[in-house]
Image (cartoon, rainbow, N blue to C red; front, top):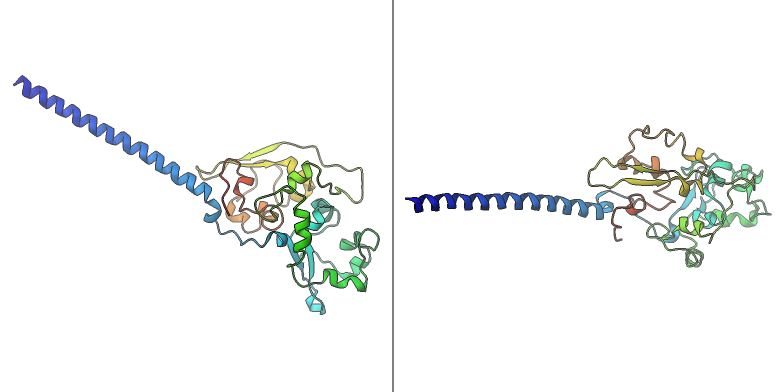
Amino acid sequence: MLKRFSASVLGKLQVKEIFLKIIVTTIVMSIFLSLKVGVGELVASSRYWDFPPLPPPYQYGNILMNRVSEKKGVKPVYFPHWSHRVKFTCRVCHFELDFEFDVNKTEITEEDNRNGIYCGSCHNGKNAFGHTEEHCARCHTGTVALGREKFGELASTLPRGFFGNEVDWGKALKEKIITPVYSIFNKEEKPLEFAKPLWLAATWSYVPPAYFPHVAHTQWLDCANCHPDIFNIQKKTTESFAMKYILEKKFCGVCHLKVAFPLDDCKGCHPAMARDKK
């Protein structure tokens, strides 16, 4: 009787132990799988979002200005950002010369250029080739598929990036491989000394925070380029700041879809993410 009772109790204890092991194993596996899925989504995040296809590196950042060109019987104007950002910061064109970030939004005319406004501020025959008839075809090309060889020569002298132009422009500036002009009107003007970084928490639990270094942006831009039109100045007051809106060319997407490193480089903003392979 005692032996039978002992065997019964022992059997129950063994069943309990086995059952407990199953529960623990299930919990551990669930955690592991959830982490595995999370990591997988982090690594493959650029495949989750419908990012616009990237052109060849030499074409990334090239734009066609065609607000009135074809209406007036001429080819659209080709503008390669990569050849200009070696010499000038973004601030020069998009703050001092008042070019809108969106292509074809600036009401630029040939008359303006000839009067020393917009492109004519530099393309005056002194600083760069002027707006004279023999030079028309240099800008009015009608295509962005130009400059492969020149870009290749330039890129070979600059730090390698991962997406877009595949050039690390920030590193090139920091190491003074390039020294673009900050202001064409005031040689003494310098970038604002504001190095405060921002860590922006993601709404998805498995996505690490985004990192925003002010200093990396103030070297290229003026505060007024971003504030207050694109971002409110006070922290956490910019509404609807989400990836889907960035993909609609809002917020960071104003630059990081067409000129600055593209959103495909998730690690560029989310440092804890694994860099996706192209």
